[in-house]
Length: 479
Picture (spheres, rainbow, N blue to C red):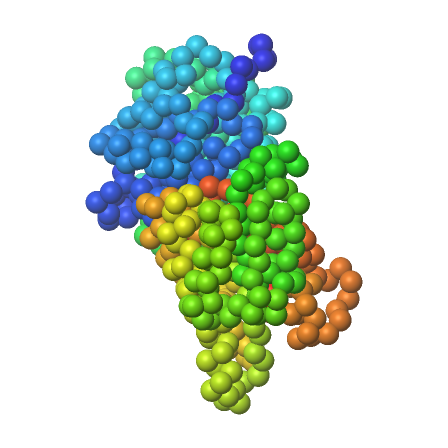
């Protein structure tokens, strides 16, 4: 290796159009989970502490859309938005021209892989301390066959040595530049990715392979849009990066947080944490302020009182919920109306009343769901169906409010040690429940992030190695 790279540059490769999706816009501009696909990638890179600069290579004729995305999202690390070429390799070559002679750590990522994780990005940059070229791949669960021109099998390679390539791919810029200079001299040059260029024209340069992720899939076929949208709903997203004490105080200084359902449990912990870091916090609940979240007049009065006291509202959180148990056939009409009003109509009323004030501050709304939203459970039909509706509400509002600069997200904590859960199930083994203070910290991080339209799972263990939790989640608090 030569001298140390001067910076970490990430290139978003968005030069393709994606005709297989049958759309009249490039696939990187279709909306998934409240944002264009490319914006998910830009947001992940912009928030990553090790990315210094982002260059976007966009399909011809669509640069203005990306410029608007970058402006509205305030993605300050984006330095250039340039036209891509007709081919992947041509687009990379243009990116290298934009970088110039700098020998940076260069990360190249497909704009249509919106679920790339911080872990993958970190490991790519780490690997560049030891290698000049890095790929990302996952083992193949399927047997891979090779066919000949007559469409008959010519070979079946051993599966253990095969990997499915993903992005990002990472390089010392000087090494990739050298490989492309050699490739340009080859009249038969053809490659579908950048590691192929290095492997073919600089065969002595070892290419390290970072472990990828099944979630890091590429939006190529129509079914991929559906699958990625579901992954945003069902898969634990890497939470926004936590902050130092000083950074929390700086972010919350002069800000006002309103918590409905804030008398105890998760709501109270969110309020306490934000207050400890300098925010002005006002909580409302049925037990402490006689606020009934299912009544518009109560919600409106709460909002008005906060404005009278603080003059602004930056964040609104709703943790209010009730848990009716029993079969639907045995549930009274009174319980049906009460549970539906509190668990579903209340978030709607809160959203309506809060919107004008969140728009004025570019603020954020945070709702809570439950793991039961993915599949209705016997004995919890009212609760499960309402929590599924809250998820859809989150995603719909994220789309509606994005042009207004208001973010909407939802947290799905696994079984959490809240008073509501204890009341419903009694005392449970120590260590089997998620600490509500951890949920509060994650909630604050999400409120302060640029994310919108996300449904964030919170689990004690990494969901990629733990089994699916069939137990109903009671992470949200009662009013």
